[in-house]
Amino acid sequence: MLKIIQAPNPILFKKTKPVLKIDKKIKKLIEEMKQTLLAQTDPPGVGLAANQVGVDLSLFIMKKTEKSPFFVFINPKIIKTVFGKDSLSKKKAIKLEGCLSVPKIWANIKRPQRVLLEYQTDDQSFEKKQAWFSGFEAIIIQHEVDHLNGILFTQHALAQNQPLYEEKEGKLVKIEK
Image 1 (spheres, rainbow, N blue to C red):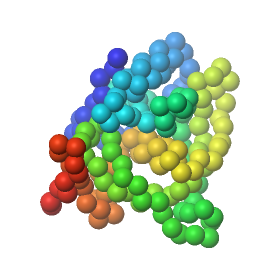
Image 2 (tube, rainbow, N blue to C red):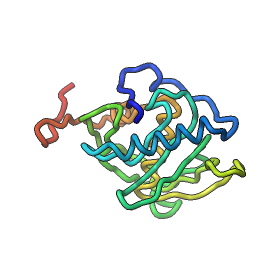
Image 3 (cartoon, rainbow, N blue to C red):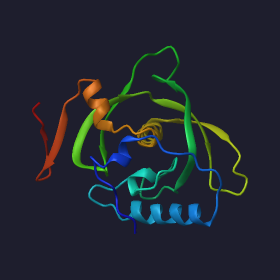
């Protein structure tokens, strides 16, 4: 199992490099990332970026629920975002986010509710794909793409003037500035 890198490790704050080919090394990394994500139980993880395990490559995995399959996203790029159920709405989803690299810290983050993502998968074709994601999947994708761009959710919280909360004895306690 891989070790999850904790903030303030510098690898979490720099943009990752593109994956140039899917080889045995990348396949092994993806499998090890899956096992690492499955091992996270307090709290359970739903996404994991390569730089969170110390690998400077643009790839992440997602598993939104215990019963969901894994999704692998290589060289992901958010092409478009939509704030709300339709493009006329400027409403943003506000969800409590946490991060395996920033343990026991949580914040309400405003994010678009839908994203159009360009990416490659770990199949043999390695061709670029585009797909829309919404709801919880869109939030996970934005969080993980942020990781690949060297951005932590806590930076969004501060930029949005949202309080940070620390988990203490099973309760969330507001961190005073």
